Amino acid sequence: MLASFLLSLREGLEAALIIGIVLGVLLKIKRTELNGVVWRGVGLAVLLSFLAAIALNLLGMEFEGKGEEVFEGVAMLLAAGVLTWMILWMQNHGSTLKNEIEEQTNQATLRNGQKALFALAFLAVFREGIELALFLLAARLTSSPLQTFLGALLGLLIATILGWVLFTSTIKLSLRGFFGATNILLIVFAAGLVGLGIHEFNEAGVIPSVIENLWDINGVLSDKSEVGLLLKALVGYNGNPSLTEVVAYLSYLAVIISIVLTQRRKTSPIKAR
Image (cartoon, rainbow, N blue to C red; front, side):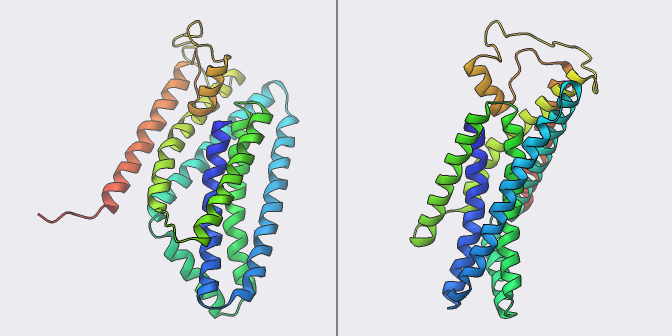
């Protein structure tokens, strides 16, 4: 539940902030008659994202045995890949996102293009919605459907409330700070998806385990217990992982952390001596 909550909060708030920025620009330039165009784009994006989430879950239910294990492995690795792209993209654009959206909105209204404004709102929300649908599919594979649904619903609700508060008040949110903090949690979550994805491929015989159980601490903390299942959803915990699962998990962490730190050094201002 916590994993789906975090993912939904992150994606929902990002979409809410983008729409808030667009509406703020329209208010500033006195073109609020175009608000309806924005909301129509948002509505269509939400509907299509919801349908995509249902389709992905129905597709997963069609597989059994080895096919199910391969599908789950692919879904987890694909979600980890998209999540990684999102983390790195926000690492580079978090501080300039507001200016970029404002510029795109101004350009759309200058061209007097309702279609351009509709497309801007639609694509902003639809991108987040498709990402969230994929993430929730991966999260559902590590927890119960009810917990995943409740976590997602709560996350989206809070994201909507926060977005509304930020739009209607003078409260300012540091986008770079917010996304930087959530990036840390999402990196660990993505590493867990990589490990669990490799585990599914081990089970299907697609990727060899090399050593089937590198260690086994299920007697101390079972990955089937309540705490174990929570850790599985958050960090990919497995009480008896294979060698390839552990190598994939640690390799992902090493690579992504190195990339993030390198990007941070490049974007940090050089201090004068």
